[in-house]
Image (cartoon, rainbow over all chains, first blue to last red; front, side, top):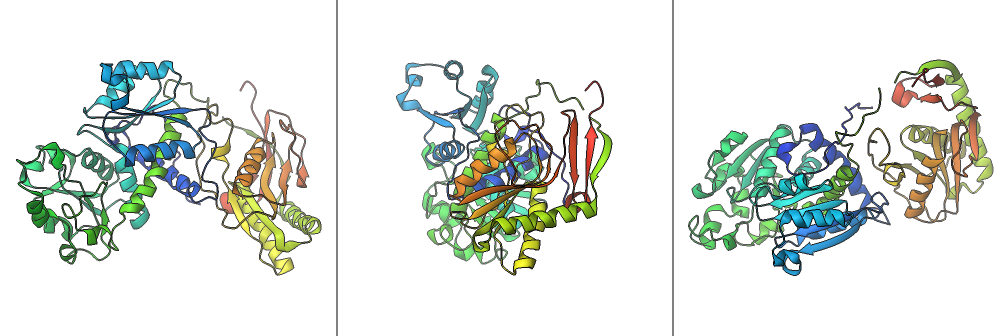
Amino acid sequence: MATKKIVTWTKKDLLGLEYLTKEEIELILDDARSFKEVLTRPLRKVPTLRGKTVVNLFYEPSTRTRTSFELAAKRLSADVINIVKESSSIQKGETLIDTGRNLEALKTDIIVVRHNCSGAAMMLSRSVSISVVNAGDGWHEHPTQALLDIFTLKEKLGAINGINVSIIGDIAHSRVARSNIWGLTKLGANVTVCAPEGLIPAGIEELGVKITNSVDEAIKRADAINVLRMQFERDRAEAFPSTIEYFKTFGITEERLKNAKKGIIVMHPGPINRGVEMSAEVADGANSVILEQVTNGIAVRMAVLYLVAHAKREEAPTDAV
Amino acid sequence: MVFKEKAKILDEKDMERAIIRISHEILERNRDTGRLAIVGIRNRGEYLAQRIVKFIEKTTKENVPFGIIDITLYRDDLTEVAEQPVLKETQIDFDISGKRVVLVDDVLFTGRTIRCAIDQLIDFGRPAVIQLAVLVDRGHRELPIKADYVGKNVPTALNEIIEVRLREVDGIDEIIICEKPEGE
């Protein structure tokens, strides 16, 4: 039997992968494997979070992440409440902190928050004693997306240590990229980021990544590429003139993948702009794990909800040894 | 916490005999071996179940469906336990509906683990019968649960623990009774 160091989860929140140790990240990934098994059972539900209430508090539109969190909570038998900006008191000017305190007063247990401001999840977590899970804050972090990306990579490649991962696309405005960089480098992967000049944030190399402006270079030695969505709706016109231009220079095509390692893994956090970041053939091709990522997302989020709900919080007395 | 070893209850030979006897009793009570299935409760129940399956298959020359159950997600004390349990996968790759399922665990104590295992099994389907086999019954039940097959009944005090060591995990087959030192 492999004896592994037993890691105890002590954090009430999941705010970002920057704040986790390698061991804590591995704990989430290990537990996610067990939760993935739950999803294959004839009855895809366990009573683990019965009586707990999870609030999805979303200040930004989202289908995948919100649905995934909702399913994860329901598979754990928690009650789920969805609050979206458009139909709530947020419209009347209530602050994030007030909303959080009210949710706590309503005796809920976990707030899953998405917000357009970087640091929103942390601010919320400091003003409530219930758990906060970051579902994306501004350009800062989207930890569960990176965790499911890493989980998928681990499933496909067996280990993260030593693998080459290239993240391609709008690095500057991507919380997915940032969380992936934190998580992957902590687990020992070699990370390369690839983007047009204007979409590489200053100082990114300090996070221990290589930089390239050539997509062919990024693909060449990669075991996996994680292709980000071009966020044209956030007016990046100055960074790149048009979607067609972008596709020509940075789009992932079957032609380009011919120079890649055999079996290169193609990931995308969704939603895909077909014909912008990648061709439809690549998105649906044999190397693509995009839909597996979606399935794995539920397992990873179940693990996160389970761990924060049962955290052995640091202030709690530890067992006398 | 350091426990003081008090006595060895079963050695390697005793354990082997107990497992063989339990296997025979299981066959005796479940003549329709075509419907028999064995499910071990993690961690050590898994290995005991494996040994029982091996013996039954050798005796009957028939395959016996075998599964492993991890009860963590069904525990009623997750918020209270001092140590966070390590989550592992459940593996039941056959349809348990209509089966005569024998649950296997090392020690029967409060009965709460068995309650979790039964609840979980029922979420997988509707077995014809669920029976329970344990290597040691140490008493102190907190739920109305009783074992169908028992290796050894060991009356214990609450400050004692039963330590089952199996060669698959611990490199040795033995069962020790230990005592919590005074003042803990």
